[in-house]
Image 1 (cartoon, one colour):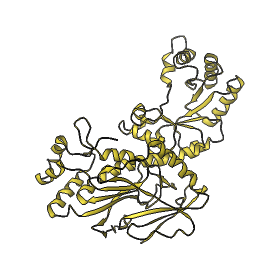
Image 2 (cartoon, helix red, strand yellow):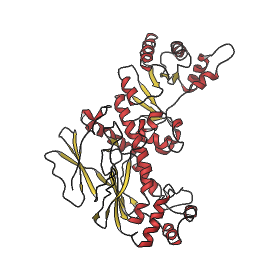
Image 3 (cartoon, one colour):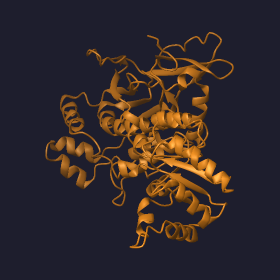
Image 4 (cartoon, one colour):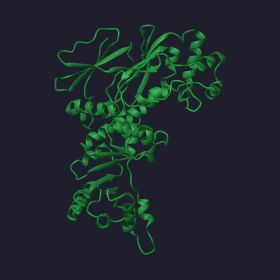
Length: 440
């Protein structure tokens, strides 16, 4: 994780926020309410249309970002355009000193789940709203879509390759979120460096076209150059011209131990069957078939019966497959021990600091999530096994020891998906996989 104190060589995250967070701070400092003890909670009122569960992602990135949420000279210069000197002086010394609990990264969530609970003074907590939501909404949207794709793939290898369809600064975090949800590798090298996600990638159509000349396309020359450089285990892109001819040329050049062939266009199901028959007929029975090209969870599910070994997914995963945000909000729920709640139509909140338990049968299948007041008794379990969902993340402003690694979060997603009732994994419209009960 990043260091605790702001340093000149570490970029501050303090301006990854909205101006109104700072103007609220100024008003609260002026009227004396800034130091009231508060709890803010992050939750999603509902899941995106058609979704039956969500995946919490971005928690690790948020805690890292919190450690560099500092106002140095350059940040204060921006804020000085609209803030008074008292507020600027307060920001100059800002350090979050409160506590944060939350669902572990990789945990499943449902409507109303108190995914994050931030406690401290109003002044120090309100500043974290935009940062918390921008990270959690982005990463959770991608992880939630990616988990559906992983389920649809039924154990086949998944490669995230959507960097060219994402903002360049968001692409690595998109790769991380997809990997957390069960993807096996990414094409994005910054994600490899920053998060340790395994990298993957070989060649695009441009490399094949590069070997064109006046006397022909010379697809074989392109394949030969790739194999000589990357080895016979590489994957050759065979659909630049004619797929049947491309497969034949690939095996002619690389031999029957060729690692894989990739199909990036056309009717992927039909082509996968044809290519598998052709490869087997040529003796390349171990050569894998990789498919890519506008895949989403529905297309992947449709290909489940086809002889596909690897899926390469781009646009759909980095855009949340139609739900680019998780719809999470950051709401004040308690002030000096008093529950407070928003009553606006369709934007209601539930007052009071909360905890949550998830009930499961002895088989491990979850049946219900119960959200209750942290100050009240734990709910009855009615014979089911109960698991507390919120875990300590930050204490007195410092990340707690032993926070989950990315590998541990991946395992949590996997176990969570296994725990859902079978209908919870459907891709069709329906209710959330389990109900959420709110106790007053």
